[in-house]
Length: 274
Image (cartoon, rainbow, N blue to C red):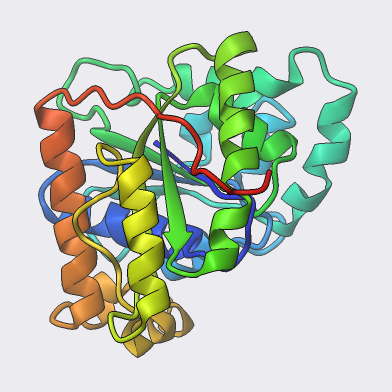
């Protein structure tokens, strides 16, 4: 599952780490691939990612086997991480000259024995956290993924780039990965007290009724505080509204997968500017 949205500040990394932690707390084995040079997902999951640490850069650029750069998160049993280091910032330039550059993450993932294996060590979910852009790193994630989760902040500006993002998804489906499907849209930073949040939520649900989760993630100080302690909100304050919302969102995602829900993406939101 690829978590992507080229707009920054919509909750991509926050949603990635908290959904992954919630799924792992439910007894599933989850791998988080941090594909953002900032390494915020690595920080939130308690993983060291200073320069020189074995990371996703080594796998995507240098071809190091992914199994050599996976490390378990100390926070939750069953949660594993491929960290990102600042070296990844130069990966887009280095990838330009490589053959089949858009498929390097896909090959790395498919070569890992726990991604498509059949034994009990197999990962139930692989979640990829993307940078806030539509560059080569995000393209690698879209080519590698089966499903896509789009976090959308419940504000008007967050909708503006949705059309461009969905156009990119359709291009990837047409030329590089026909199996990619936008399966999940998650409303984040939702403030029930404002008409704007309710209006954005209604508009998105009208155009994407099958993809938008019933659960929305509220604005929460606890969610914002947790990364500064090297934790997700699931371990920092498991009884907080934010943690409970992510737990419920993870339950929706897991139940949808269990029922084999097939939810192809619909037309972009009317009036959304690409």
